[in-house]
Image 1 (cartoon, rainbow, N blue to C red):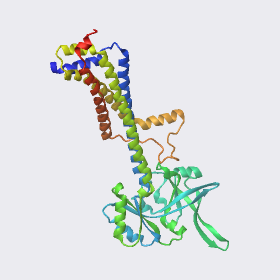
Image 2 (cartoon, helix red, strand yellow):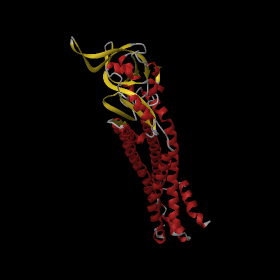
Image 3 (cartoon, rainbow, N blue to C red):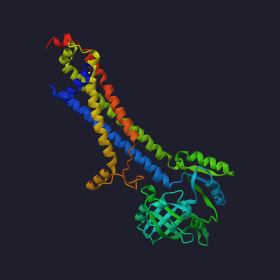
Image 4 (cartoon, rainbow, N blue to C red):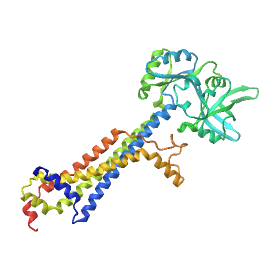
Length: 413
């Protein structure tokens, strides 16, 4: 029974009413601070994980993991494709032609990125085929001069499937009238919506139609590939290009989207650090409440000491109380954080509907909604670290309680 004295008295102090209500207020503030800190940290980390996931699946699902090209065009691209497809780390290959141009419909004109693709192989390197809201990727047949637009781009131009648009490319043609821009009428055959920035700036046409438009003959700009390990794309693409022989230009997603991905990772670390500091401040509020409690309970401490309680047992009383406050705060915060992380998308959607605002504009950001992905590892390290900070915060006040002299404390009682 004597061994359970710190636990019994510590828990009793939590339930008991205090003469000094300010101490109760400080304890409540400490617990509320822990609850909010842990909850917000779990939610924010889940949202950042969601952005990380969307970056990999949507943005990096649209852009090439790697490209192998040649200056002036690649005429032997079919044999190169066969060699690249045989590499063990490659999941898909497809030829491409890339250029920029102006797309116009009636009085609307928009600068766009034009991507010539082979529909039959493009599905193996891009997710765009799974995100059509009208039409299909298979409608981009050779010689029909069809074009597929992003949903935002189609809305800006005011076009739909079946409309005729004029595509103007920066290449020029020499005629009797002099230098004239090269342009061609295309039929809109499909509209896709990936939920990323590409929806407002990307147009897809058949790779052979693009070659005719740019007068490239049977050549293409190069081939794009999808690898099994996204974070080894540079190494894999480089090694494949070296094994081909000849002179090739090599690029990968880290050159086009690497800065955005690094920015997300850096923001994730910095936000986590800032929120951990908030949790630390809340945890060390326990120091204030326990120090004030020790001062308020000096008479009780003296009586315990005169009854034979050791300094270690007195320390245990206040460590139990502080640890219990921290444990309750962390547990409640973790539960609320998990619930918030699992429903943050619905919460933001409700706020947008209620106040008629758009938190993430798809034309500005690469996604138009709040993603969330809850990781058990995040919950474990957040709750573990928060509880550890709460426990550490109890050491100093408990040590002060153990140093209280019974004679001094009882002198004025």
